Length: 189
Image (cartoon, rainbow, N blue to C red; front, top):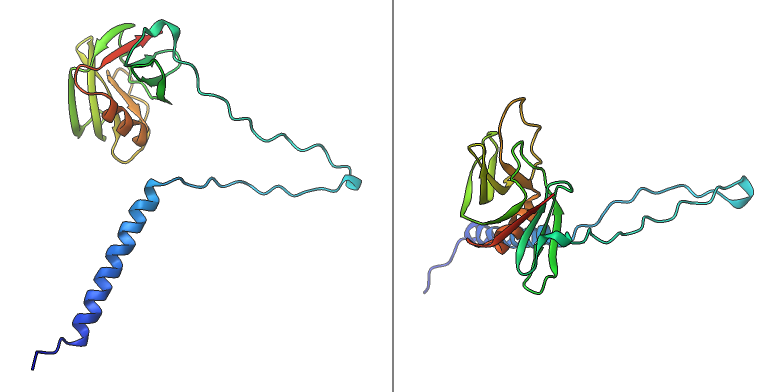
């Protein structure tokens, strides 16, 4: 007669399986779209002297890729707009996003991704990832990166030279996937 498995073993196995399923579903949900909260506004009746309601916010198109950035597959970084565009080989922007520049900015011009580092600690002590180096100036290396915890960088201490151009976490992952070694980076004013 085969040995009987104790009920506690069955319960433990089923519980572990359920926890694993919940974890997988939570990870999948975190990677999907997130609903935006909207504030409810009380409605007033016309007889109570209602004011016209504000029009819903208009969705504006993202800023166009700067015309002075050349052609072909490239990363475009605008110093003035504090914005990056990932541009495919057909000159179509695949993604654009704002960035937080460091205290040392590259000069306008064309560069190439020279080195990629998966993760390290930034000069400000923050754990960063997706580091893509492309320039240097005044003895400071300049690279795109994002904080592992997704935070924006605090203001640099007075006199501190930092070359990190920080992105949001999702934007950093997209830039990392786009920017292999040798990818052209065009810096414009």
